[in-house]
Length: 201
Length: 104
Image 1 (cartoon, rainbow over the protein chains, first blue to last red):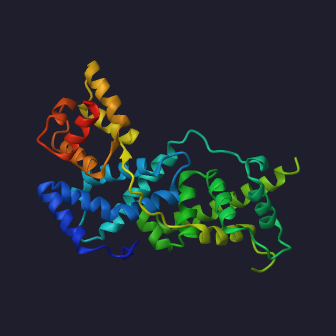
Image 2: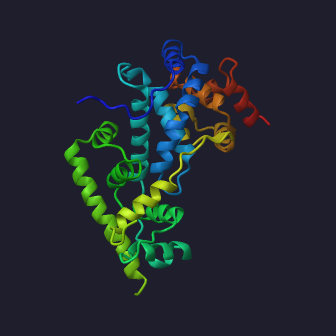
Image 3: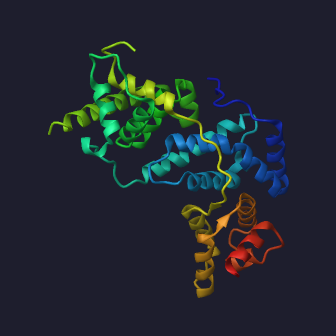
């Protein structure tokens, strides 16, 4: 299977910087690399960020690992794919290190979010929830999933990546991704309905 | 939006619109706990009280990107060097930042 490009091709200047870093450990080249790759890394971190973990802390972990291991990078593949996979793995490890996952109840949501949940669960209306509220609710619900399920939902349903792209980022095969996505959606739906149910209890 | 749409599809649709790409902040960052742990694991933290003080100051310092890169570069060159050697390495941005931090 062809390895799909996960992000648009970055400039040739970063490839030159990479060469300078690998050959001479040129610190200016490393700085250029980090600045050039930062938008890719921080976007991934913000999308997968475990709550209460600072994005810049995870970004440093990504770039520390990047500078320590980039000599193993295969330059026939896009550098963007390599750093994206590295960033996602750092996020997955941060998610795995959490001691427990929360169980949300009605009172854990703001009034605005509670109204949004009512709208979302009311199948008789075409009215949806405000985008910001829906996003906040979904972030809370994603916290209830195991790290791998959460990553699959984020990549497939929020970033709208293809199965092939998710496979390239995670290293999981397409069957695993499909099964994981199916189960994760079921858990999310149950979690959303449980929050609505907890309103009356 | 059609009535009777799956609540989960509704929430995905709305959340996608709200999801924004994040821009880099220009504020200098502080060394993360994990980065400091890596430095310690590589043998850069000795047991002396001077080093403990240096580590405390280092962990609280605001670090520009250039200093982060320079320090990582030094550590890659000398993974087992004591912290003192890192501080006393040839002139570079990490040294100046760290020295300003630990020698006020």
